[in-house]
Amino acid sequence: MSKPWPVGEVVELKEAVLGRRSVRKYKSRPVPKEVLEEILDLAVWAPSGMNRQNWYFVVVTGGLRDRVVEICYRGYLSYIGERVERVFSHKPRVVRETRSFFATLGGAPVVLFAYAEPGPESIFTDVQNVSAVIQNFLLLAHERGLGTCWMTGPLNMEEEFNELLGVRDKKLVAIVTVGYPDEMPRIPPRRGKKVDYRGFQEDGES
Image (cartoon, rainbow, N blue to C red; front, top):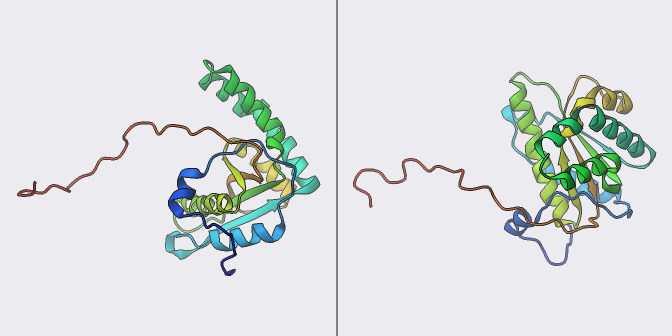
């Protein structure tokens, strides 16, 4: 595991959780490979079923990244676009911005592909294992001043991505855009109380 890096003013975990946003506009500034390596070296310290650590990542930039963008946009036109338009029929701006994002991936210089290696448990376990690493990655990237966007919309193009990347016998869980942010996304409100606490006031307790 990489040693902790000097970051100047350290971002506390609470600040990282509250400050992280899904970024959809990026600067053209490249992300150093060593920064991505440091983040991923830490991100994989995540829990996994049976401690299998059955994740696999492909990190893409340069010309290969441009081919990824082209596949993403075709996926939008053939599948996800219709669903976006239906869900946000009352918000045409969201539809326009989503289509634009899929067409360019916001100019993100790096795209992370997160795969699961099939295990003895269910696909739900495999996906959760990989998702735990992804969340770590998002928070650690935010700490380093990077923006990210966790995407599942392009998964309908999994076969084309696998052919492009030479990946076999693995399940694509998500792709994540990565780069230095060129926007300050608004703070979305949380949608009501969705936690129910049980058994905290037993008989005889006030």
